[in-house]
Image (cartoon, rainbow, N blue to C red; front, top):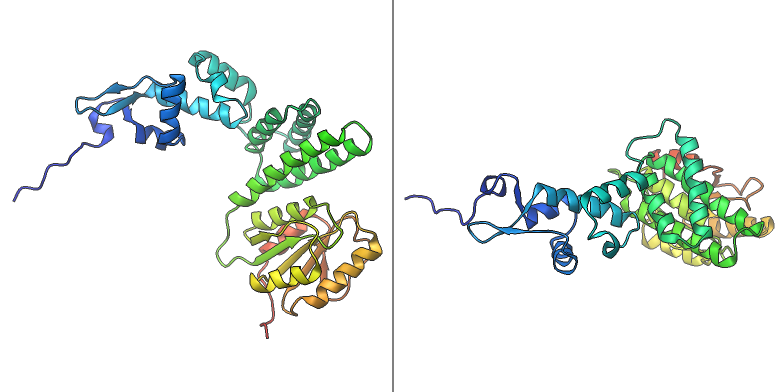
Length: 317
């Protein structure tokens, strides 16, 4: 018996240089739903029909959609750029997105990028600052993003607020921007096989969460599976979360607490945690050696190195 004829031919054999909408979505990363909205609302694409009635798009359409996606990801509104000629789009992309290759000097690159981001925030150009960070971070290894871009930016934001060059509103806008960047960083981190499980937080009274977020991101970047709990949690709640999530490690950040209160919180949490759960602490409020059974980590690199090391937790009772 002859095999049944296929209902359609592969896209690459149907029309050379033409693509169905599913192929455009696959090549550009823009969903079919969004592509249809762009075509209907903004006239972004100019489809044609195949002999079988399928809507087809050209290589030029694919290139245009790819360029538009980069500009939208960088902070532009699709309504502002959708109707621009391709030549103008490419000039805009070249001017605003020069970060396609690793920089010759990553540290200098990160310093310049931080300064530009702060200037955008100072003018409340938060979308521009976000786009700049997204594009710039792509040129840096993930560990360098954390250690030389994100962590120093948090410090810069705090200094700008302390010396009066940032208003409270500017500081809040910058903090919200950075929180979003680190949330994305955590979400996209790749978990290693056999990864250690961790929770990250701050103790009661510690409202500054960015140290915990940075530590969580650093551990996640090293392959650990990290649950970020947010700031200002009672020690009993942290211990309960560690038990229920079967965490091997608790990451505790202490920045603005009085040193004596920080030491008390560390001791309380250590008592509340099962003996087999490690407690790692860090931050400016930790100024002396913590109690026995607690590891003091002073840098994000230390967090990353410890997170990569195999766990040695004793069995739980």
